[in-house]
Image 1 (tube, one colour):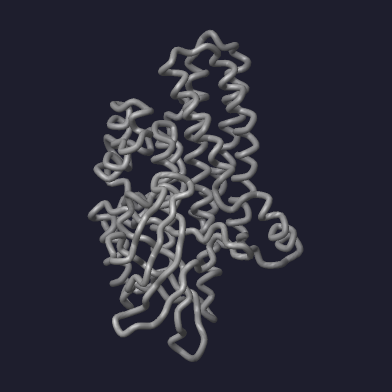
Image 2 (cartoon, helix red, strand yellow; image 1 turned 180 degrees about the horizontal axis):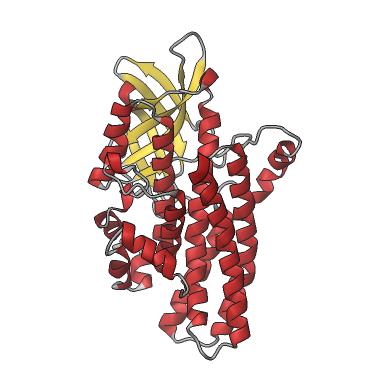
Length: 368
């Protein structure tokens, strides 16, 4: 089987014509401001990839989704990274919403109309994890009024719906409890700055969220954070696959270059395919029983291991490619920058040192 053939076949099966549409556009046009990638992704039915078929989605397994993300990353790395966030958001909604009518309305509505969902991370807040509630809320007569700042890592300009954590008044007594607020992107009070960058920021200023768009805890003792943390394994899996795809685009160029020594080509192939096999192991864990704490831990181990593998593969691939014309050089430079973005994805490895140490002596795994 040729390099990336399995992944592209999976994408062709689940999202027909997407690969062909992407190949018809140059990499730099796809990746540039206002490029057609998001539109092509929507037209192919991409937003419904992880939605169950009962809700008009493609019903992809975790293994399918990983392979699709790798194939997509080899054609349009920035689109792959953005879509990984959408798919994580969909997996989260599917896991956390227990009411079938609400799930049909939200998950089915997104899949059937090809809308994009962004998840707001709580980054750059000292002492808070990336999944911690990032918004403040007050109870109003028309619903909960939400304010605060969050980051969506590439989807701000294209999103139709934002999911963000918020602390809301408890229904069963005094105090507060965590919940997820589902905020339509066109709501009054929503604004965006630095869209399309890793530092893009979404600001909510007294945005009204009606009761039907609040996902309250369904776990014992209101442990929404436990369920949400476990589902974060999806994000680690999908974002890892996306960057493996971007690195694969460089490796593929080397494999097709007969000027490169055969031994060096096979060396790159072995390392990058070994990394993909490790990611496939995480996908199978999710498919076998759904994400839990141990799956999340394993997904982080694999993600950081893949980072290390790509730090070896990419420089060697660039060296083997040698002198390039200006167009090819621009593409290689862009792909290299994209692959290096994996280290910027949450959570950063150095922030997980203490949580991992606690987990290894039977403590709970927290996301820093």
